[in-house]
Image (cartoon, rainbow, N blue to C red):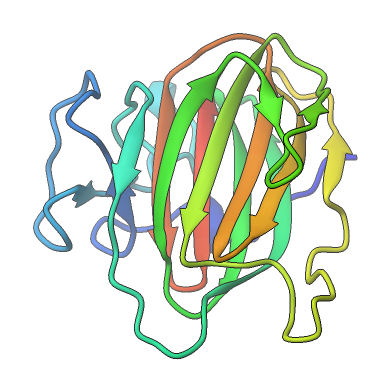
Length: 199
């Protein structure tokens, strides 16, 4: 099932979104504000003339971004949403959050392992992108999950599946099953972290 995102999340003016990047990326970072590991974000015009497409820099994984999260209380992941934008050349996964965007790491792995059980997780796809949020959780104070769907198969050009791989001791992990390794783009909005995978 394809989920459409609101227009504000597909087309965000420059200066509102911070795109996270690591020094391992192949693109040149640019940006006026945020921590040293952040850079300017996608704009509302598209490559090839399509409207409503982000044009921020594509980067190679791994990506690592550090944020200071005020205490007490951890940011909570409340939903995982996906959408495909074939006219723009990317698929997108969005993590909805309460509170600030926490620190995160994004990297390719050869296998997806559940945290803390250590059990393997089988996902449709030939490459696996692991997104790890530090100082975050996806459950309430009673331990009940805040995410309705923790595993999903989709039929997008690149993104084929996702699964929550861990929610333990302030570390939340979600894995993406992709058709192959590709460039990524990461963006931050208040209450949202999104990851684009290039088609």
